[in-house]
Length: 140
Length: 140
Length: 140
Image 1: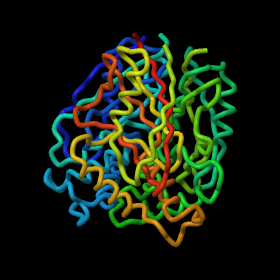
Image 2: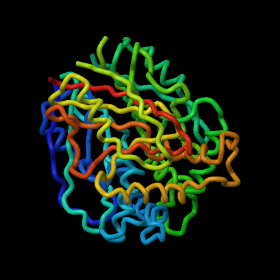
Image 3: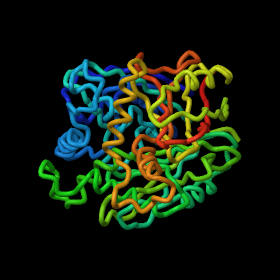
């Protein structure tokens, strides 16, 4: 009934990345569930997960530009500065966007809108590989 | 044990709308669950779901005004502009606020704080009807 | 299979507070689950829950400073002002950060990254005690 696996995404450059395919591959590696929920948890505090448009990549580039405006580096009020100027803004972005998603499952697949895709928000300049725990539950 | 339905909200104008009643009606249309969780997933990328104050409607108007300040239209760094000036900010707001909620169920109803209500954030000027998938699980 | 309890956190001053220990104590008070999910719901609209760095407390102080810049008090467009200048910004922060978390469980404990902790975001100057509903499900 319950299945839980861990995957590791390879290092990605700073910005928003469409990872629907990696999540769907992970789902397919588990026993199929006909109705249920897939919980997707990032094990990090300087990257994020969100659902957004899966079609036009300019949406992802605009999101990165907007988040850099809204959560700028090198602000005089930052105390947590010794891990680099990208670090504290990365923590803030991770909490603004969230580090987990719960996705409906129907007929063994993700039951999302046609334009909805899963984004990894990599907020560090060199974040490295990112670990994700997937927890699947439902009726067969 | 698991139940999953889809509802469609009618088109609403841009802004935050209290939709607790529509969510509660959808819950009541399913077999009752005494302890459990109701997952509520919006199938769109330019609208959002959040919990906030269900009493004073000025809270919803102030949220719209604040989000329009924090995520303004017509910024010079936007590349994704051909779907209208309301579109890219709508995508950003959808990710800031989130497109799903997981709500505790107790005694067949939503187990929330007395002032907590479900908001639909309609971020497009003319978003149209909005589809929501509800997934219910728990003990009878 | 399903367990649901409520806890109350004591009043905390305005700012972000690491509450992983209180959540882990609450989890330990329930029957152990070997794989599952713990849903954590705040019953309030002027405080928030988020996952972020559990080690350096300067991260929590910087988050408070940044959120006060990004969601300032006393803006001319606020209509909801009669509950104090900290109130409307608190509602906005609660929706930006979120009022619930769903946390993976493995071997009876929270299965999170080594640096991930649970923060309560207290956004009111005098928010008082905060009630949280925890809903646990999984396989023994």
